[in-house]
Amino acid sequence: MVKKIEAFSLVGPHAGNQIKHSHFSVMTEAPSQQLLSWRDRIGNTLDLLPTREQIENPFQAWANRYTVGEIIYADTYSDPVRVERSLSKISVSRASNYFLFTVCTEGNSHTIEGRHAKHSSSAQTRVLVLDLDQPIRAYAHRHRLSAFYVPRSAVEAVLPNADSLHGRAIDGSSPAARLLIHHAAILNDEISAMNNEQADHALRNTIQLLVTAFGKQARLNGNARAAARSAIFDLARSYIRKNLDDSNLSAEKVLKILQLPRDTVYRMFQHEGGINAFICNCRLKMVADDMINFPHLAVKDIAYGVGFNSASAFSRTFKRAYGMTPQDFRQSLQKD
Image (cartoon, rainbow, N blue to C red):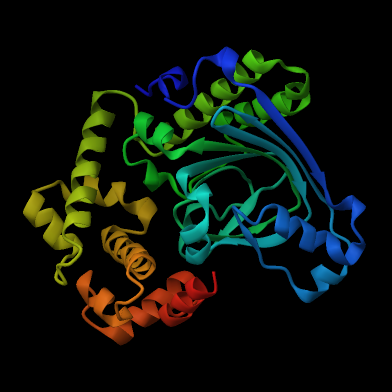
């Protein structure tokens, strides 16, 4: 079963968690500066990708942010805008140490674009989880949103393979989503009047609901059968990550070497787009990490070192996944 939030090594004793509150609104800015002001405000987590027309016109957004120990909670409102968490953003952002759980209490949340779009294409997306150490691009609809930033170590201590949750959404019409939306709406209304201990307890309870809901959806928690599935999933992912430099690594080779049940493993990796897609994405992430950590190495040498056997194919794959060439990514790091 999923461990309780109290087992998370998030913070010290509840009574010591002082609430830090801040309020921000773009309404005091000139209309032509409102969206730009919002972009600066959330820039540590996401980049905004506005059109020229959006910048020139009025834009409404505000946020109430509460910090209790290592838990960060934000009640926000925003007009529609496209957002992105890029590789270059990840490389310089401390937010990479967090998972972001969002609950849309009014309107619709995000439509995921690009290689994660298959995970949450429904307009009914109201509850979403992002691993802030992984890139993503999305269209953020007009919404009021409850955002829960939870330390990576805390989520990984409760759910194995937590990074596989990235981009998962819970349909807004489901019982689990309705419960979470109701819970978040009450939290929005009441948190400003809570004392330190009450706020800490309320946030932990809501995060517990979120972790349980996503763990159940991803089949990463539960009974002995679920535990067995999780063990198989972990074995396959671990083998892949340790053998990325093998240019012949494939779904067939993984199944053959580990002697795992084909149908079960294929279902487990469905959320990743399949085993071969997971292999490719792991290689791309390793390339990006190595480009950050070893700026003196040639891009093609890094690509060959993690199993890509064609520089041109690698460049096309990288651009398709991240919207920029490897060279553009390296240049963006130099600018930062």
